Amino acid sequence: MDNKEILNQALKTLKEGGVILYPTDTVWGIGCDATDSKAVARIFGIKRRSEAKSLILLASDLDMVALHVKEIPSIAIDLVEVNDAPMTIIYPGAQHLAPEVVAEDGSVGIRIPYVAEDDKGNLKGADFCRELARRLRRPLVSTSANISGESTPESWNDISEEIKSAVDYCVPRKLESGTGRASQIIKLGLRGEVEIIRP
Image (cartoon, rainbow, N blue to C red):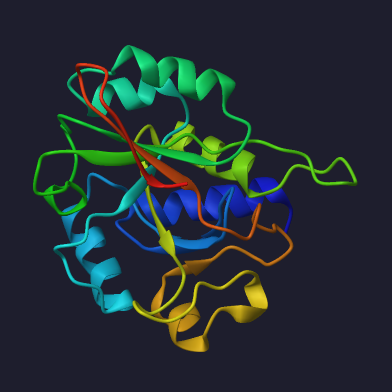
């Protein structure tokens, strides 16, 4: 199966309300359409995760982010333009998303996958995620592919069979994820407030 076929199958699964296992710019993740409450609820069930914990989303670009937050703080644009590693920004004023992905204070964490080449010049999971979100025209839920409380899998081989069998489509392991580590997380306010949640 070539990359185009893989992308098409993942997209079809998401459009049908399904859950996928896929490589991101950080680690392997479980994802769905971030506007689909039923699919999001399934992810909480698969991970056995408390619904009180909000989820990180992946967007194709800042234009997509702008559709799902009421206002983008100006500092966010600078951060996105200069960052040289995966960075999730928590924005105030989430909108047009499944309620389950929004935090109690109305904020939402969104990352534009960081595209970086490996030492052989090959692009990894980041461009797959961006293209998938772009074609879906909605953000993707992105949460690590593990049961809540267990260690985050650094590679395909670390993902449990329980997780693999619980999703509707597994992207083949030929597409590897990025850094193997979680992203940094920065929370922004509309008046220039910056809080580093995870360095």
